[in-house]
Image 1 (spheres, helix red, strand yellow):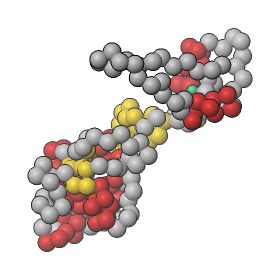
Image 2 (cartoon, protein in one colour):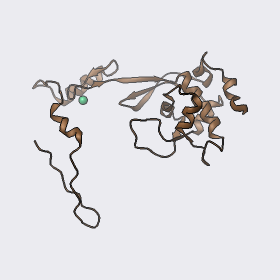
Image 3 (tube, protein in one colour):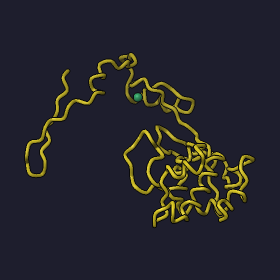
Image 4 (tube, protein in one colour):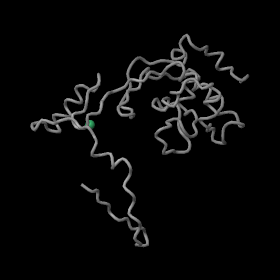
Length: 198
Ligand SMILES: [Zn+2]
């Protein structure tokens, strides 16, 4: 079937060019979709998905793996948050609002701990400029939130795990942990706090 495109009209009522079909549409006929039994209702398929999603289950509609992921607030993330807090106070690196370019944080961390941007799921960091980039999830500028600074200063604890489905936060699990718990044996809290002579 040839895809149909509605013509867009701008505010002045002028006719705009119909867009080129995106490359992905050309591949659509080649999708390998699961065979569906005639009696399977969408409701039943969703029920089975919900039942299996903790361990991972193939969606009976699209064939994709549906799985809930638990992401741990690990030692590298806790370190990254402390470093971001320092950088956020440095006028040479941060802007007036304390936002730091992810590249500068990345450089300071020495290329380790690539999953630091997941701290946003605990509400510990926030992004400055919104970005549409889905491939580079840490792109843009970042700063610690108020909660993030409280966590760094040992005034607040957070749940050990963030639970994600399809990249979206659906809840928290595990015991409450402090920044020192999260750093564990890998990094020394006082050493990180005095980073750069701060
Ligand atoms: Zn599906």
